[in-house]
Image 1 (tube, rainbow, N blue to C red):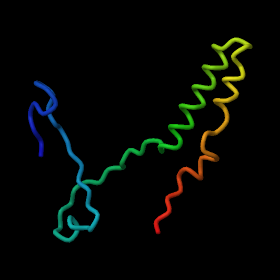
Image 2: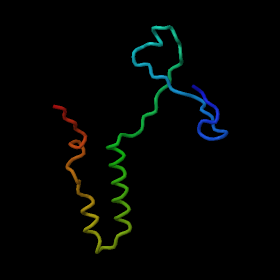
Image 3: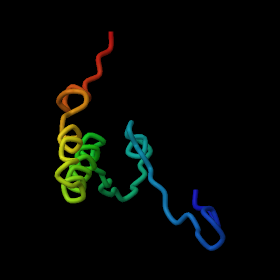
Image 4: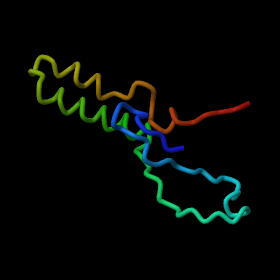
Length: 90
């Protein structure tokens, strides 16, 4: 539902999303215009980009004597990224 002053005074809720997983709107003949959802980057991609940015900043900021610490940061802590994404259910 739309609601005035929901977020703070003067900031109203102006829209909402309808998720129709079971085609209830189609069954009950409701024609609501569909929109494309916005997808953000996956968690793995965001973590990779953040780590890459950290490495770049370390390379810029650290003196030659601190390069060993930067090399340690480059090593993956838990193996390749794909192995961390696997979920096994028994």
